[in-house]
Image 1: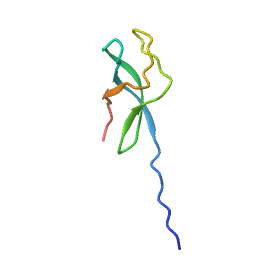
Image 2 (image 1 turned 180 degrees about the horizontal axis):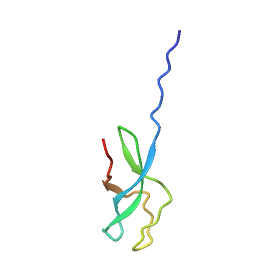
Image 3 (image 1 turned 90 degrees about the vertical axis):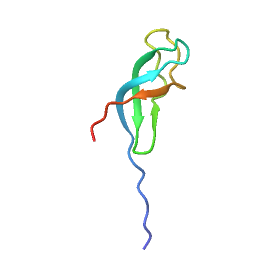
Image 4 (image 1 turned 60 degrees about the vertical axis):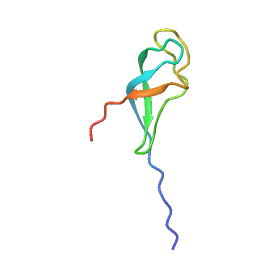
Length: 64
């Protein structure tokens, strides 16, 4: 009998991310699991148009 671990399903929600080019907090889609959060690739900053692929997640409103 072999037991396989299930990978947690990543959920997507809107959150605040830090744009590295214009140094402002903008809204973006954040993919999260119980262990990590990352910005969904392919998004653009709404202020300057730069890519948010390397942006840092600042805030994600999530109920317990």
